Image (cartoon, rainbow, N blue to C red):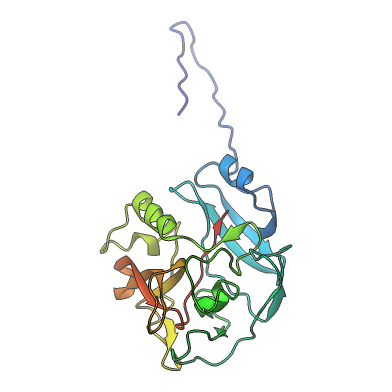
Length: 242
């Protein structure tokens, strides 16, 4: 964006580009702070390691000026606490189990098939570190310390900044890279390659299923909306920096 004006008497001038790497100066997910995210330039990206299980995730400061994971969370079978996670105390993330039905809203279920592209699937009770049964807005999550579940407003702002519409599928593309990872219900992973649901923080209403808000991907990514889904379904997680 800079401008250099050469005088009429200057025959030539050598100009050198000075490149600045847009990358984080931290190595772990747990190193992220509000100040680090705020001071980063939009487009800053890199790979950070979750020190709870040594899984590495790509992260980026996206056009909404928020720092997001750009891969799906895949932590399973770990005891976590407030020193390494977005929790108020201790919580044990269950081991991976077979896909489940959606009968029980208080189910603490996780399924991970070692697919790093799609990540793990969690019931909302697990995603929110045991905000169970769903009540109001969850204050905590199984995201790494310094990160949290997105709110309905976070998703709305991201879609607006990205220019996302219900038909352009932009959030499925770089740098966002949301995946049509499907979801778990009826004892199976359903819809991989065609749809997904990403957990949000807020219970929408009580009743059968205790619906909570999600970012919903349908039609192989060409229909991206904000909607409500059953808390007992196995959904994906993208964390956003606090």
